Amino acid sequence: MASRMIHLAISERIAERFDLDLMRFNLGNLLPDLHKNTREAKAISHFRIKREPYEDSKDPNYQYYDYNKFLQKYKDKIYDDLYLGYYCHLIADELWIQNIYIKYMRDKNRKKRIDQQRNYYHDYSRLNQIVKDKYNLKINVIFEEIEILEIDSRKISELKAALEYDFNARYDDLDLLLFNYDDIRTYIEEVSFIIIKDLEQKDLRYSRGEREKGYGKHYE
Image (cartoon, rainbow, N blue to C red; front, side, top):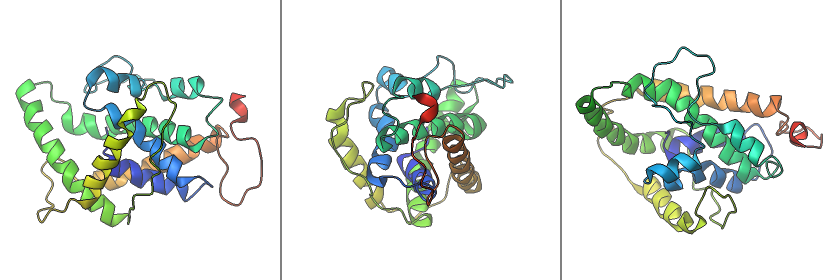
């Protein structure tokens, strides 16, 4: 999965295009990872399809997270920017699996994967600082109770503490051991573009300055 800071960078890029309640949209974008430390709960919160993320598939319909299932389940609430943010998170994580995770973490040798995993989280902490500074990110998040069945809202306080840690942590050594930063930067920009196009094509939101009504008309 992409890190919280990377999700926020994508969220901010999307918000540049649409009139959104940024505080709720950002919260929605972070919610699926509330259960990242619990395997089963994480699978539920991400609407996971059962398969291995390092599986090499040439199937054009290959998918790891079923974001369209979330969209169908919460179609009556997708006008709420919190739910829209959640939906965008799932798309971003799907594209992370396809474009980043498989590239860097696909080795099926268990020992090599353990080493890769160690470097993976080392780089996450450094990328938090790099991405935060590059995109001038702030904690534009409202921490409030939510009603998404896949999420335990009691963990919102944990999210607040974790996000504050992400923003306050500073490292003198910003060298990455696993990732190439150009891949991460390209991922953020391309995923933002893909999600924007998805929202427009599905009429889930209109671009800034447009006056049309009826968000989500395809899902009424």
